[in-house]
Structure formats: structure tokens, C-alpha cells
Length: 269
Image (tube, one colour):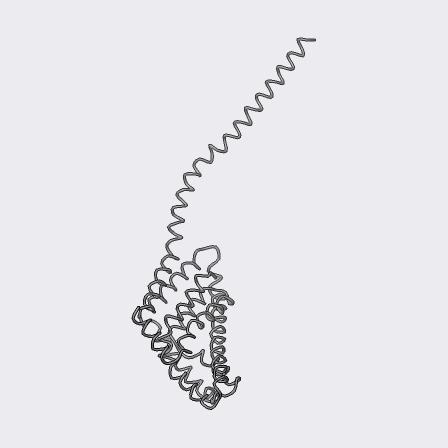
């Protein structure tokens, strides 16, 4: 796993967080209402606790995605460029999704069924007035259906490494935290800035270009490097024959010297 993937996961979460706010805004409001009777200090601690639970849930999903990548994809990827090409294609896919393509909407609908299935469990964590409840709420929150989360999980799958998948998802979750913990005024400012500067679309375009670069630049470099090796390879017989010629000449000189010495010795006798 490279630093570039970590950075991509973080910015994917950060610039996609207005979408997260739309999906999770109702849940955050419900959490806040359930903590109205606790002190401000404990309220901040409970908020940190349920966000830690959410990030832990993402990391667990990333671990599972990495295990799937290892079990399913690893046997197909040994000794070839498949990992790189697959990663590039996934980055392009996720980037196009961030640009607005509704590729993952069907997955969101499937995920909503599971979210509804968890409804009885979700009701048991309210009110969020204790740390175990806040942690449990955060762990459940990680399963809220979200196309952005599913896109990040695809990257975790092609990382085909469980620990890398967990780290990628945890960092992705960190990117969503500022928007979800900001005050009402700050949330409005962040949303306006991200929308006005089209930062989500910019990040999507960067991911598309990065994916294309991951796929095609090594191919181009290999092609150019292969051409250079071809010319060097043609020179190899000449380079190998030179030492042999030198060795042969040295041997002939040594033999000639030995012969002359033998002749001179015979004449002296």
C-alpha cells in the first residue's frame, strides 16, 4: 500500500462528506437529541466515542474486503500486471462515481435492506448517554448504506491485503469526520466551499487520471525500456567476444614467449 492510496482514501472521504452528511444527517440529529441531558464535556466525549466506533466498523469492513481480495484475487495475480491494472480500473470507476455517475445506487438499495434489518438493534442503543451505547451506535453506523463507502471498499479489495484494506477504510472514515462533527455554521461553510469550488468533482477527476496513469504509464515505460534493451542485447555478443579475444591473444603471447625461451635454451646448450 502506497502513501498515494492513503491520501486518495482520505480526500475521497473529505470531499465526499457532503454526500455523507445527506445520508447521515438524520442519524447525527437523532444522536444529538438522545444526548440532550448530558453535560457538554460528556457530550463531546460521547461524540468522539461513536465516531471511533464508526471508524472501527469501517476498518473491520476494510479488513474483510482485504481478505476477500487476498483469497479471490491473489491466486490470479502472481507474476503479472493484473494487480496494477485492476487498481487503476477501480480508481477510474470510483472517480467517475464521484463525478456523479450513479453506478453504486443499486448497492445502496441492497444495503438499505440490511440497515432496516438492523432496526431493532439500533433502537436498543438509545439514548446515547453511556460510552458502551455510543460505541455500539458507532459500530452500527458503519453499516449505513453509502455509495461512497462501497467505492472505498472496492479500493480495499484490490489492495488484496487485509491490513492495508483496514487502514484505507479507517483513513477514509477520518476524512468524513470534520463535516460530521462541525457546528451548524461550519457545516454550511464547508458545504458551500466544497460545492462552489467543485472539490468533489475535482477529486473525482484526479482519481480518474490517477487510475489511467496507474494502468498506462508503466506500459508506456516498459515499451520504451524494452526498446532500449533490444539495442543493448544486440551488442552483447560483441561485448562477450572482446574478453575472449583478449584472453586468446594473451594465451598466444604466453605460448610464443614460452617457445622462444625454449629455443634460446636449446641454442645455449
